[in-house]
Length: 263
Image (cartoon, rainbow, N blue to C red):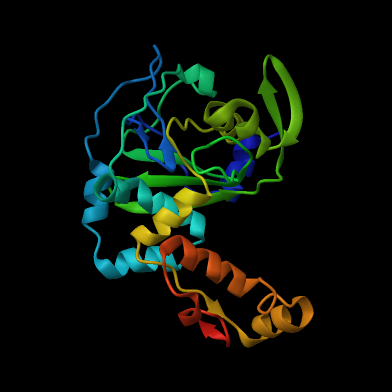
């Protein structure tokens, strides 16, 4: 990759520098970000993102969730979970150079790396980061920009003193969030120092926290699932419905998917 900055500008128009933020540890969501180093200017931002989230109107919150992928809900949860869930601090101390950058550019911009891990263990945050996003928050303009990174992107990954090429989602499984963040910073010329990680169980909690997500199922999609794959009749869509209802203690018969439309 000859020009990382040009590639980044093409993919993610306005992604800016990250600043220090006290890290959080949730039961199903992990966010670690405390950094120390001679090049890293320490600043206190207070709860700017929390205040920004609280300042949004209800319809703005709903629109933000509805117009993005499920992983984007994690971005919203960075603020929401301060209010909705109890959590303990879990600080991580790294020098900026250990994460692939030297200094922070703009203290009004907060960058957060968002990782969705493929583990099925409710207490585990180890595995491939099959969902990778970079969320850029402007605490001055109150604007949010999101860049999604394809999990199969082939990149150089430096681990244990050796650099090899591999899929970017493997960085997390090899060296945890530190290596994943360092890889993002190195490839795209960023200075991210904050992240949040969610597993499958945490994703369910996030969806509940925002009141659920409606999915519109077109008739053609339903027909294909029924006739070509037999998903609806054979533990497919409705099998998933049963699993969800079992988890929440609900009667699945009320939620079976029988026709196209909003579910």
